[in-house]
Image (tube, rainbow, N blue to C red; front, side):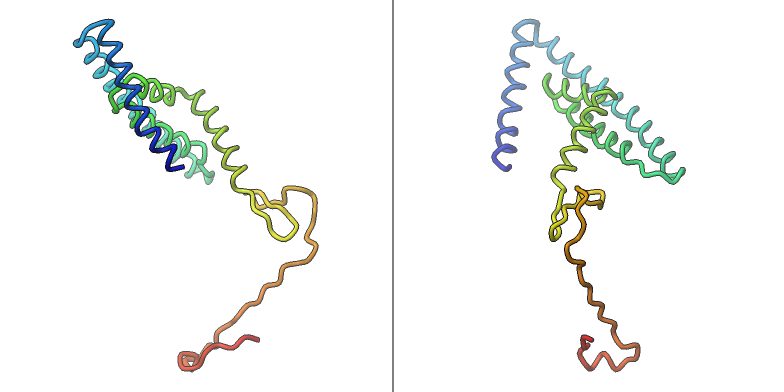
Length: 166
């Protein structure tokens, strides 16, 4: 994992430099600077506007007593889009602008939700549970789990003596 992050930290700026150099060679320095500035300004304003809209949607969902999970995922992706858009470069601007497209966010969000669901499957005894708490298959427990509850005494004497198990 650390190797992938390190590769991205090194590779992405190199690709950005090559793209900016190519744009400069095909046009001019002034055009390159204007493109970088305009994409940054326009992108951040779009991200801000969409972020405020998602913020209002989160408030509407919570006021209605619903969990705003899709809206929160949208908010995180819009925040990432803003971070990509303020980073100078053509590649990061392309990724940032694509995250501002609602259809792209929905598709990426459903992919991320499925990926997370696959990663959060746990096994307890012989039954596999998914992230929603229900068994992954129709099997039942072979043996019921046992639970032992220790209740401390209600008087102040328990401070001097250790608790006992029943």
